[in-house]
Image (cartoon, rainbow, N blue to C red):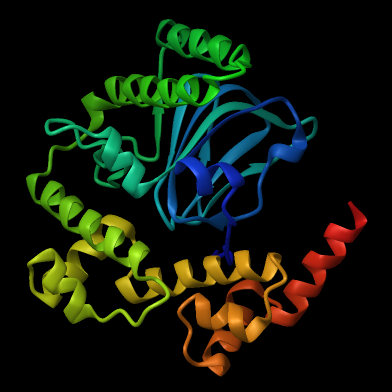
Length: 291
């Protein structure tokens, strides 16, 4: 059964830091609709009852001690399958470029999200391996500092990634070719981010990465689960949404986001979000007025 997945809008933290760390407690409201996003997501399941993880139309049973991986643009959700359902989890969402910044020459953190890895998308940990995560959560709960909270959060993210990589490493397939692809994709994404409102061609991206068009297209798809053109389209839509929320005129929002053809922007927006740009802006303004 194929279920339609919808894009998830970035949280405010992503705009500022490129990552978001959060503790989801025992509330049914933290279960999610089937969705995808352009960042990686890692979760440690702390406790769980009558909830499954749905990924690419496949259900996975989850329990305490599971590490759950969500790749970029990979449809997924946590779904209730019984009464009194809940899923408490410690969660990290991180953009591709930020994940690469936390990586080192010998450690490619994106390798944790390769579907060829054993047990993907879930790794089960013994209880003794969970102790360090509970200690990390204790620090997270006490991070209310006046001047250095950002430094503490960055440290938490780096330590969380280190713990996850250490536990996931025995299951990771070392792929030299993938590492080369990741480096190429990093260059491409950084270029797209800088020139999103401009006309971007595959020839320009190939020149920037110093590879052929066919190679960069293949590398990008293998790493990001998305074509370059679709990635650019979704990033432009995300930017247009931010402009619409700021009450910028729709045609201007489309143009500043890199859409030169308003008719194409209108059709693309409605096909992704299910409503027109006008309806989206009006709904957003109404929600702001009600707050």
